[in-house]
Structures are given as structure tokens and as C-alpha cells.
Image (cartoon, rainbow, N blue to C red; front, side, top):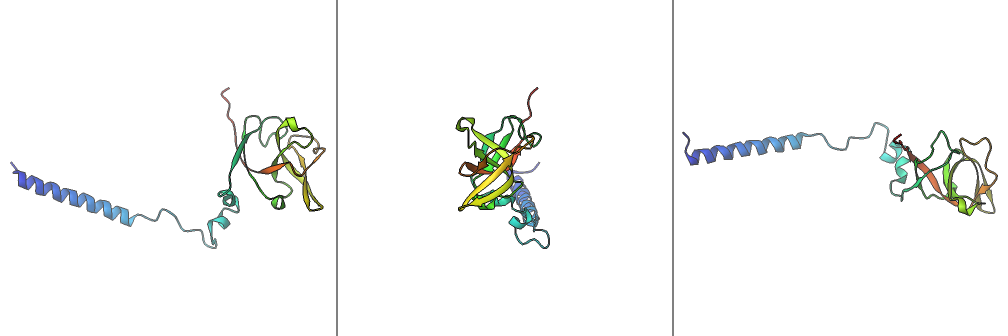
Length: 156
């Protein structure tokens, strides 16, 4: 049988060994942030602009209607950020207040044409599921640029 003093010394040695192994494993662990691939200078370049929006306030709107099918559809969550109109280009999806029907609410359509008249940017839009372009130009009604979609999966 072991006396109390020997048991205490043994427990102390076991504790020191376990602590030492833990310290060694933590010290020898690879860094949590891996280096960038060769030729890439920073994360912004690596992600090709997506992270440029990480510092912006990202808004979410629930989409409804068939005009953007199959890109997104009813109950999908559209993520968007406020942007300067100068950065928008043909092919971008924008969100805006309907210019001719204020009661209609927000619309998300793709830019098919741009213009600048007297320093005011204008955008001709079209829903991906619509056969023809919208009959209006979006100018002051612009809310932002759609940067993502969270697709709704119904229960039924």
C-alpha cells in the first residue's frame, strides 16, 4: 500500500506530465490561419471582391413573385448591400423601390443596360423570368446590389 505522501507526489508528477504534453501539443499545432496561395497578396484578392462587402451593412429581404425564376423564387432571402451607383454594371442584380408603383414595394431585377444623364445614373432592368425588359429606368429608387441568396426550402 502507498502512503499519502507518495500518492501526492505521484499525482503531482502525473499532473506535470499531462500539462507538459498539453503545452507541447498546443505549441506544435500549425497556425490557425493558413498562408495565402502563392501569387495572392491579400484575402481581398483571393476572394475576388466578395469580402469587400464584409464591412458593409448587409440587408436581407424576402423575395416573392415569379419574375426572377429560376435565379430565385418565392420566400428566398435576398442579401444586399448599399452601393454607389458608379460600381454597378450590366449583369448585376439590384434591389430598388418600384419607380411607377410606390405601393408595390421592393423589386430585385438584373441590369441589362446603364446610362448617365446629367450626372444621374440610370439602369434598365429585366427579371430573369420575364420575356421583356421593364418599361422604366431605375434612378433614385436604387436601394442596393444583391450579393447573395439564401434559398427557401419549404416543408411541403
